[in-house]
Image (tube, rainbow, N blue to C red):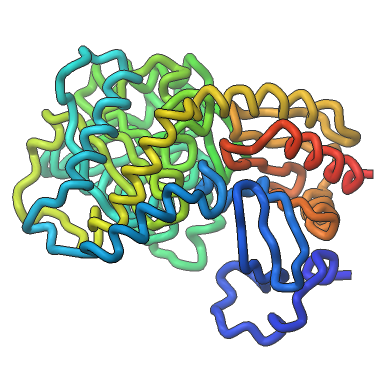
Length: 401
């Protein structure tokens, strides 16, 4: 029996007109609300994938939907040669929260923001920014094995996953990778050609692996000592997901650059790169741009998302979800370890069965992500209720037997 059959494949998708980048789709969803999804046959699912950490507020949040509809009838796009209100306000809010998380003096603007449309675009710009800031001859970027930074060519080169490089070789030069949490290897990789250390505080696609405190502290110290940037990819871990506004807060470091996306629009495409003002000052008009980046429609969505995150204290809710979900996962059969922070978790299994388990769970009405052959990733909306967690764990328990 194939994975597609196990998941109760929609027969209407047998001849799918979409390219096979994501494999053969097995379910067609038509409606969502909060943590719930419905397919076109009317079957209900609990979504503990959350668009891969996108749906922080859950599906079809009424306030976000209203903000998008209102803005769509007002102004959708204008060239970035001019300013728009929502982009201005979202940038200020991002700067305020990153500055607070880094322990910088309140009441001052410490950074500036560039808007784009996806996490890959955000990382691409972070690499360009590092090169421009460092100057000619310093172009290297050091990341870790197992990391994931996107699928555009430079972002792919930054990924510490050689199997993803091979079909598209040769990769752009300048990227090197070291073992996660290996301080000595990181130090040895930092020759004078390196412009930035670029890290996920928690590896997402790599299997939900938080970096160690010692490694994060060493990365900041080494970057500072050698006049390099500490650049953080918080595309998946940022914006309340881990129980803090940003994952870097768990480690007490002060980044020079932060990449954001996913939860920022709660499903509407938008991404952002924050950089300290001293770093952003290296840019000149024309160095980089994005036709759609920071458009009024996307930033209206982001403005409402950030407003709700603040008002409803979703970082605290993510922490509470993490406590309940971690305990429930640890008690399940065949689960040998639970790792992650807040509502960004992985359950390690005792065999290479994650795809089969995910298939059985989907058939029973629960979506989870088989992130490695032996691990399931769970990134539910931060609005998920305790009752929904309990229901999901009952389904997953049955799928593991």
